[in-house]
Image (cartoon, rainbow, N blue to C red; front, side):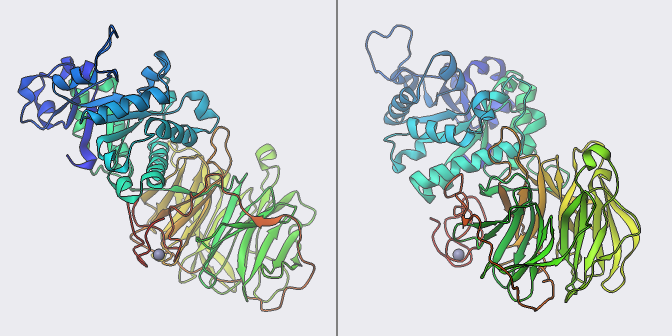
Length: 581
Ligand SMILES: [Zn+2]
């Protein structure tokens, strides 16, 4: 049985499908209510939907594990959502049954998942952890080869609400993290985690691409032989863009995370939470820290001599993270109801920054400008001959000769020829969001091959746009509003993604990341100004960031060298060999 092809069919559905020999011949695990002898030799296993934990006694109506085994069952469901909600089965009951199933030499298919209320309260991973800890109490690591975990988001079953594959993947990754923390790497690598949230022919291909979804627990769709056959024969390599899956790495709870930049020299990631005016710093090994500036902070850029340039509402400032000194550099659109938004340094060390009309959602007025702060100081110079509402996507190709820019509400990303002395020219459309896609282009970053990686806020995706304007890769997020991206990590091959808060999702506003395998980023240029940062030290609210989910970050990055683990099941750091925690 390979990890990626275990399909569990509920036993009451076998009557509908058992005559379809193609399915039975090729299905690994089927839950059957009785033993069809013709299954012998097919590789199909038989399971039960439920057992009672007592071997014998006056328990009218119950079926013992012994009875299930006597008719050939090798697998038994435990804790299905209907058992939990309709029959009141608690984690303790699930624990007793799991113990019994394992003692009988059978495999427990342990179903976990949260209700709609729990989902909306942002308790998904907490509820799953509680159910796992309850049902698996006393189960040893050596017994975990007799456990399959099936995640069912109860709220997504028969309600019309959908758990996107990215949401399912993020929960599965959290489940695997829980198994790793409680049973170690070997068990986490081997455990099968199946998805059971209304798997359909239309959704199975995408679901099965997710790295932590090892199989499906098929419900209603298994009542129809054609549908189940299609699900079983899912497409292992569907057409369309390559998919990557981002994972939460810092539960920082940002209102509006933005402006991630990676310093190669410092091996440090910076990003901001704009409305709260917070600057985050993270070396990927220890806990991130933050400093609060008490006013809106639109963006951060690297500056000479290990200092930073900040786009604060009160203007551009230089900041020294070592001394905490903050000094004023330039006003920004004084007198306009705007603030600094997206900004990046060009390859020659000039800082390019765009504006955000604070009222653009109400008045739709294009009043903002795109500006350049010349290297070594001086007055801001306007770079475009038109105004706009909300600047985004600003970044530069490796050779510095192309600049990307968008006014988010237009949903169009433009590229310009870029000359660091004279600015942008020759505007042309690179990409316009199709009408089928929600949201708008937000922050972006360019890779070493000239592809643009653009966060599409509202679509829950980062898209990679080739120089020819084609999307050849997407990064899927469990949250809807990614806001900006950059490459970082020792190999510049981790894509970091900031996000915005949403109601009902505790991970919205977190920092996400994914590994990129076919291209790396370009080292971020520093704004050139070697003058020391003088001025008073910022004193307010400096300290470590308390992670919402302890260990979320360290489970993804080597605590020794900071390199991201190259796959969900990695046991050792590929870079330095340090064992995963
Ligand atoms: Zn390492």
